Amino acid sequence: MSFNSTDIHSFRDIWVFCEQRDGKLMNTDYELISEGRKLADERGSKLVGVLLGHEIKDIAKELGGYGADKIIVCDHPELKFYTTDAYAKVLCDVVMEEKPEVLLIGATNIGRDLGPRCAARLRTGLTADCTHLDIDTKKYIDFLATSSTLDVANMSFPMEDTNLKMTRPAFGGHLMATIICPRFRPCMSTVRPGVMKKAQFSQEKADACQVVMRHVELSPEDLKTKVINIAKEAKKMVDLIGADIIVSVGRGISKDVDGGILLAQKLADAFGNGVVGGSRAVIDSGWLPADHQVGQTGKTVHPKVYVALGISGAIQHKAGMQDSELIIAVNKDETAPIFDCADYGITGDLFKVVPIMIEAIKETKNA
Amino acid sequence: MRIYVCVKQVPDTSGKVAVNPDGTLNRASMAAIINPDDMSAIEQALRIKDTCACQVTVVTMGPAPAEGMLREIIAMGVDDAVLISAREFGGSDTFATSQIIAAAIHKLGIGKEDMIFCGRQAIDGDTAQVGPQIAEKLGIPQVTYATGIKKSEGLVLVKRMLEDGYMMIEVQTPCLITCVKDKTIKPRYMTLNGIMECYSKPLLVLDYEALKEEPLIELDTIGLKGSPTNIFKSFTPPQKGVGIMLQGSDKEKVDDLVARLANKHVI
Ligand SMILES: Cc1cc2nc3c(=O)[nH]c(=O)nc-3n(C[C@H](O)[C@H](O)[C@H](O)COP(=O)(O)OP(=O)(O)OC[C@H]3O[C@@H](n4cnc5c(N)ncnc54)[C@H](O)[C@@H]3O)c2cc1C
Image (tube, rainbow over all chains, first blue to last red; front, side):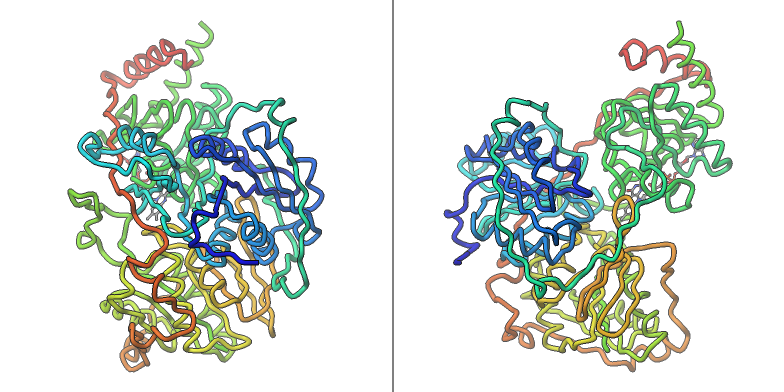
């Protein structure tokens, strides 16, 4: 089998690696298939998902409902649980045979293990943790016009360019960089969970989606790692990414940690069905578990309402929440940078302000 | 047994970061630190060294002043250091970087029981790519996001973190493991003895001449020019317009806020 990553004209189609755990699709699958559809339309090509696992054929078709034209299913007992060895071998084998132009992988703990391994084997570039993707140059210029301080009107762009333009934060969010991989294929990117919007599901499209089973070759020599067991966190994880209302607390709750978290929960309840998040300072202090962290090294969220209580607004925190639809900040320091991205700011002690806010919201709702 | 620990010196992005008018980072404005996840990798290696006879070698690729960082790490208890440094290597992306580091380790030799530890990711790029790419180039298995590492003959038991739990993974040696921070891994301090001795321990410098003939090096995919990925544009995000600061007593501010939210049908 001949595979040459520099023969860039022999590569076609947009591919998404679809991750499953315990036989269930991940949210990133829906997000990436939805995003991949847009890219495939920009490029005038097909969108193909690749699903690896064991006895998972039945979950494949649903992905068609979000825009996939075809799902390639690789089924093998050794693919039941993720191992780098087995997954990298199977994914690279299909890629080498079918030569996709673009390969997107969700930047989960597993995607970030698989992506670089495959990129090195395929001898191509990989861009990590992307938050925005374009193929069409005009669309990219529109994106820059709204999301950068660049003077795009006075810049020239290669309009015919069909490289995947992969944008990601760098230096902890202080800079954004758009990366291209012009000389090698596939263009590979891991994509940050929670950033790309999930499309409307269409049953008709799901029915039309083609599901193809693919023969998998794995031998014991391919496998140098073995999963002994998988342990789940005993408690239920908080769903920050799916939440409409998030009330986050920062180090500002330090004088009464439990009281502060309780206030945040009550405020979240007053808004209706909200969840509690936290800054890294709160997670590092052990006041909230790690799944509550918002920010560069936590989750990227865009709820309808984000309330920041006693959070200074470090750039790494903002990186995870500044695209929320509406931001309310309470901080006793009027110069706190969180106010720079807040729609509404209140200077004051959160322990005094929040109880009043809870009452006022309840009153308004009951009125 | 030998453990290689790959580390990187990074700008401290937690403080104030200055950006040049052209949208590049003003590195001179920031302090250089040892990448935090790499500190976990060093500690994990030293813990194994505490329990059995093994050599721990710290490896970095970077400009010549990175020697200072390597001496500090030696003072923590590491045996020797390797500095990979050449103008030709500058501007390398993760593909190119991993190729060069893999070539250096290959040159030094990787035995049946040996391991390579890396930090999961560096805070300047946050890519988490270099470790797995080194492993692939050396043709050895990898485990990423490790918080626990137990070595026995020919096998290593690794606790690998997932978003909602963890996996216990058994991996054959030689292997590469990337380490994350965890409350169970507090990096040790330099010792007084370590500091006294750190300048007398071996530090090998590998430059372009030393590595260019290595079988793992492809001269056309290293450095800024050869790297598969290139920066197309870099920019600063626009500051979102400052919103409304509510005025008055706490009660007045809250009432004003709630009225506005009700108007927008948020509540
Ligand atoms: C590589 C890297 C990655 C990072 N990733 C993240 C990340 O993902 N998420 C994240 O959040 N951080 C992250 N950080 C850390 C970040 O730089 C900040 O240190 C952190 O966000 C600060 O948390 P904080 O705002 O809660 O605490 P502080 O900065 O200490 O702010 C506390 C705030 O509370 C206010 N306050 C105090 N008391 C009260 C009161 N009674 N009422 C009202 N206000 C009060 C103070 O005025 C202050 O503004 C990262 C850092 C690095 C280096």
